[in-house]
Image (tube, rainbow, N blue to C red; front, side, top):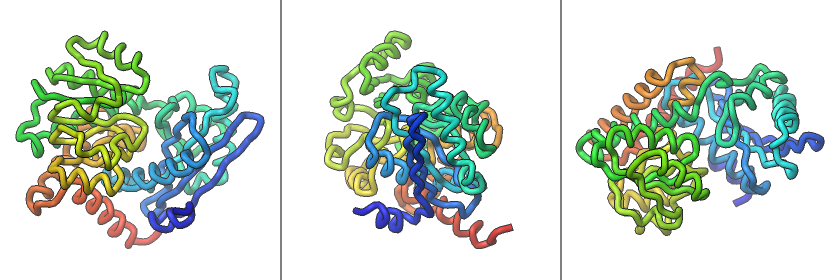
Length: 343
């Protein structure tokens, strides 16, 4: 599918390509919706090519629209995906230049897009962006740690629906991707007595976590889907579960911090397999809530818990998959609040 056709199909408003040769800035800024307010754009920094960056920005921005709406925030959804400069960003001055260049490039879009941290980006990076534009959020918030705790609380609410109880003691959980969010999730689950298996593209990172938390099993990423579990928690970069691999899953619930672990086709395959899927935009929103509202970790995570509880209640009442219920709830708020028009 061509990019413009994909944007039209998903309802995107704009896609901007950003470039600044001296700093190495190359980025795609997608704005999916500004119906509820300016688009919160998570900023990611990864080694990837142009097409992956653009498609990643489109997918992530749509997810942010649903996430913000479901969380009751007066923001739309956006995403800014940066391609890693050829010279890297190990030099602190180079990193400052990269993010200040980003801030200066997006300054004319301040009424439409607000930037906050995502994978590979820190609050200090957003502070550099904030030197060039006022349109930033979360530079004083540890969003990864808060997101991880929110996923943990949301997982408990989802487990009550899918497993019959919310206690994680003795529950077998596979976490695929143990970056900042995955590590935070693992720590909370381990403390409650869950039986953990972890995997990561960087095997040394998974092993370091296992060395820190007793009794944690490490497996290669290619084997993680085959491990028998109660809950599979994708916490990687996206699309961890390919549609063709769904038959390999040996879990009853999918609930993790990763954006878009499944395509729409994958969601259908999971439904047919009898596996409950709690969508990313419902369960991984605590960090966004904290950044947007100033709520502390406990308050943000409690909001996620209550949202998941509401979704599962409706899903049970109407015999609908939670993923369908969550999407409809988000879309319904956008419709209702959008109908009020601009203030």
